[in-house]
Length: 307
Image (cartoon, one colour):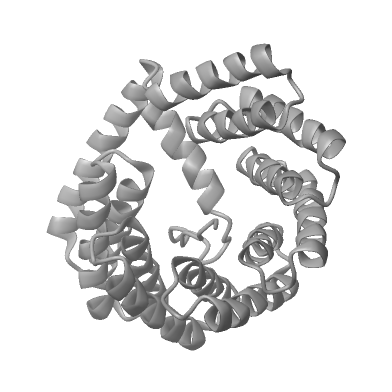
């Protein structure tokens, strides 16, 4: 909230002093839109991001790096809002623009590759999504290094896609590589590391390897709870997965206790949402941004990472 207040103050001050289309005013509009998107205020965020994009197109040109950044971030916002066809069109425009002006191996171009692949994965265009993920991963490893966070994000996403396609063995190898890379680069408690732990747990459960999946589920649940809190959607998803795993493995007593805890936490979360707690709404929106993998049917989805 403090960040939003300061950015709004800067935006309004710059617009009044410099004019609404001044590059600094447009930069403030863009920055405020990003904060509003994160806090779940999508309608206002979209209006500001469109204002930044249109102003930058007029002042800087359609191929300027800042214009393409606004286009990319508007596409991400539309994906968060569930407007996938609009998001896909904008991501393609941003990718084409970045590839032609910045180069195919520029980090911003690789970011666009990854995020267009997320859209394609969400709408079931797995073959094209896999091609883009592999391109982003190959170039990222060559340009940025194997342990760069963006490279590990593309690796995680490719692992999730392969799982969605039923290529569990390939997916497991990538998840293990990604987890090892994130542990080394980010630390064992970083949220992205925890997401790779959870992805591997879901994969192992789907493969019927319950004994091996259980410690990963426990680690993911504890990790999400420590970083995000006990009522966050990702924490609840890991708890639900662990409880389901234990029930399938025949440990009905502990499973029953975990399902009782889950029910209580879900009630508390709903009460927070009714009381207007923005954190509950924000976590739901963040999961919409992450949960683009339709894999595993009734099992919980594997998170994918937006770069």
